[in-house]
Structure formats: C-alpha cells, structure tokens
Length: 232
Length: 193
Ligand code: B12
Image (cartoon, rainbow over all chains, first blue to last red; front, side):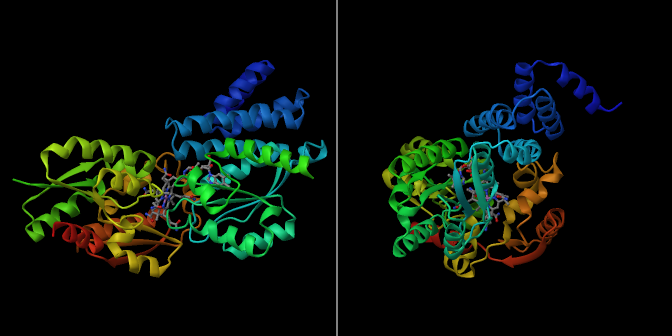
C-alpha cells in the first residue's frame, strides 16, 4: 500500500476546517499530490471552486509569502509550494470558468529585457490569477515592443514588469517613457516589482506602484481597479 | 602595521589576498563578510555598515570590496554616508571581466561561475537552490539558460574541470574565459594611491 493511499484516508477523515488547515501545511511543504487530493475532496463536499482557490490555496501561499519575506523560507521552498499550488489550480481552472468566478481585470506581465529571472514574476502571475485576474504572461527578456504590443492586442488593464538585476531595473523606465510618448500611459495601471527595487524607484520612473511581494501586488491591483471603475 | 582595511565579500577573499601578495601592498589587511550574503543582498548594507563602524578605530582607511551585488544602489548610498569607497559595477561577474567589456557583451542567457563559485559550486549554487534534494527544480531555475561561462581569475586546471562538471550537472554548454582580476585589481590599486 502506498503512502498516498494512507494520506487519502487521513485527509478525507478531516472536517472541512481541519482539511483546509492541513492543506495550508501541505502547500507550505510543497506536497503537490496532497494538494490535488485535498482540492478533489473539497469539490466532492460541494465547495465552490472559487472558495477552494481562495481559502485553501491562495491563503496557504500567502503564509508561504510571509515566511519567505521574513527569511524563514528560501527560494526552493517557495518554488515547491508554488508547484503544489499550480497542481491545485490546474484542477480548479476549468471549473472556475464554468462557475462564473469573479473577473477583476486583465494583466500583461513579464521580466524586462536583459533579465531572465522569473521565479518572482511567475509567483505574482499565479497569485493574481488566483485572485481573479486574467494573466497574459510574456515570460522573460522582454523588449518594450512586446509589452506595448500585448497591452494593445489584449486590451489589458494592468502592466506588470519584473527585474532582479540592478542593470535591468532602469529598462522599466524605458517602457513607461515609451507609453508616455505614444500618449497611452494613463490607459494602464503600471505595477513594478523585483528584489532590488523599492518604493522610491517605482515613483521615480513613473510607475503607479512598486509591490514588495505577490500579496501586495494583488491588493494593489484590486485597489487600482476599483478606483478605475469609480472614475469610469 | 596595516593601515588600510579591505572589507570584502567572502567570495573575494582569495582574490584580494592574492592581489595584496602580488602587489606587495603590505599596509593592507583583509577582513571578510560571509559570502552567503550574496543570496540575501537586502542584508548587505547593514552588515557592511556594522563592520565599517567596528573597524574604524583600528584603521586609517577602509575600502569596501563589494560591487552593488543586487542592493539596487542601497550599498552605494550607505557607503557614501559612511564616507568609504566601494567597487564600481553591478556584481563580481561584471568587474572581473571589466565592467565596460561585460556590459558591451550584452549576454543574457549565460550563467557565470568565478573561481570562488567553481570551487564552492555545491555550497553556493546546488544546495541553496535545493537541487540536492529536488533535482526536478532544475528546469525552473535553468530552463532559460544556454551556457555556463566560467570566468577564470587564475590558470587552474582543477577549477576548470570543476566548472566543466558544474555545466554538465546543470545541462548547460560550457565556456571558459580567462579574466584575471579585472577591475578588482584596478579598484584597489586606484584606492591605494
Ligand atoms: C534564484 C536566483 C537566481 C536563479 C534564477 C532562476 C529563475 N528562473 O529565475 C539563477 C540561479 C538561475 C540566477 C541566475 C543569475 N543571477 Co540570480 N538570483 C537569484 C536569487 C537568489 C533569488 C531571486 C528569486 O527568485 N527570489 C524568489 C522570488 C519569489 O522573489 P522575488 O524575485 O524578489 O519576487 C518577489 C517580489 O520581488 C515581487 N515581484 C517580483 N517581480 C514582480 C513583478 C511585479 C509586476 C510585481 C508587482 C511584483 C514582483 O513579488 C515576488 C513574489 O513575492 C537572487 C538574490 C535575492 N535574494 O533576491 C539572485 C540575484 C538576483 N541574482 C543575481 C545575479 C548576478 C545572477 C546572475 C548574473 C548570476 C550568475 N552567476 O550568472 C544570473 C543572471 C542571468 C540573467 N541574465 O538574468 C544577483 C543580482 C546582482 C545585481 N547587481 O543585480 C542577485 C541579487 C544575487 C547576488 N547578490 O549576486 N539567479
């Protein structure tokens, strides 16, 4: 008998509250099989896909994010946790569409030209998706044309740029300046992030906000979208 | 009596010592901060400041042998406040090759090793990235890389072999470039004067 079957039994015996807490732990430990199992159990118990996503997965990743920020977890643990969340999301994604989960807006995101760090960018993309944003992920090493092309083509609301190198951070300004030159800067909410950046840098290049981590990115994006709708 | 302190990243210890020896800079002494800091650049400015303050009484001059190292300009600001000089450039890969040459190359999909990293590949790359326990993470880290470039500070067949093996383990092409000490030598020499 495999370990997995043993875990199945235990997971299914937990009540909903305990199971969700157990899933937070499993996510923290990067246990993708257990997360998939937990998601399926909650679905069977009649939970909506949206509730499973936000209460079990997104909340679990939020805890991982806090411990990463505080230096308790490092990059590999975050990657494993993100992998587990992804497994859960793969099950939920088609169901979310069917059940009409909230759609908050559309974001184009990518790492800037010259930089191929993408772990943080991927995490932000995943958490934004989990919060109800549609994500157009341009990947790494993006020149300004790629960002602007995608923003126009996709009629996006938000532009997200990531940079982890001191040498590539300034490229964000190039992108924002090009948006200004084309007279379309104000059509988009521009969020920037990456470990070497800070609030002051975000302001100095003309971004709408610098976001320290994925949780802040989600909150910031929600706030700006709400403001946009109020104005509209 | 040494009068000048070189306060360096631990990853530069051998190189700074070699330069002191090579150039006969007898008035210089080396003190290092842990090389692990390079994985947590947000901690570097405070660590440097504490070390500078602690050493101030004992030396007439202090040189910080760090480049920016991902502090986003915060180390430079701190050094300015403290009134000490540091190395120009973004990181050691750049100043070993020479900041200008490195920038001009515009290489994007290469992963660099120095002598230090070739020697300490397991302790500073493989293990902290969790590849010892989770080799399946390899693609998430290195999926977008094509080449491992070994920037060699010295002629050392053993290190070249170690770097080549690291490239194999990461599934990357291998290239060796001899850089010598690059701008590190120039920076300390300029400071010495
Ligand atoms: C993991 C890592 C790598 C991995 C990258 C794997 C990958 N696929 O991305 C590997 C080992 C391959 C690597 C390679 C290199 N790296 Co590296 N790397 C790191 C390290 C240790 C962690 C980065 C990371 O992934 N963190 C985890 C994520 C979750 O955090 P994050 O990226 O900060 O993202 C969060 C926030 O910043 C924010 N955020 C991020 N992006 C965005 C975007 C938006 C829109 C928003 C809203 C928010 C947001 O939310 C995220 C989630 O909470 C950092 C040091 C550090 N501690 O930051 C060095 C570091 C960034 N790397 C560095 C360097 C120098 C390199 C190399 C040149 C090294 C080499 N030997 O060749 C190459 C770069 C090649 C290139 N062209 O890009 C330096 C940069 C120095 C500098 N002056 O800029 C650092 C600082 C290390 C150092 N001190 O030397 N690296």
